[in-house]
Image (cartoon, rainbow, N blue to C red; front, side):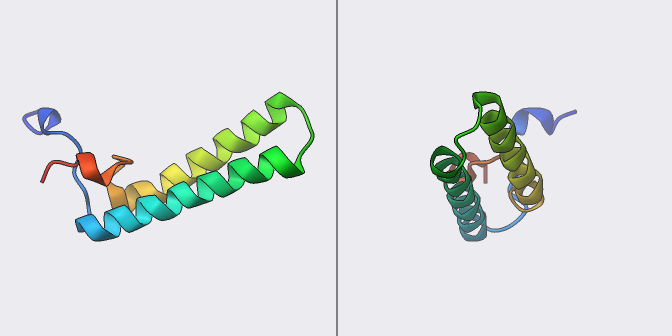
Length: 76
């Protein structure tokens, strides 16, 4: 297991990784703001929707970014 200690690896170049993470962050903010304004429901419903949206975006973006969620911290 020598590769375990080397940190996350980006599967694409750094520019595409940063763009992908920027778009994923944008969608997370849009979902969070939409939940704050549009749904007057319970705290648990908002938490469930927010968590499911974040999990979905993480799964969709992890193929490109390698699951690191921060292209700036990737070891080159």
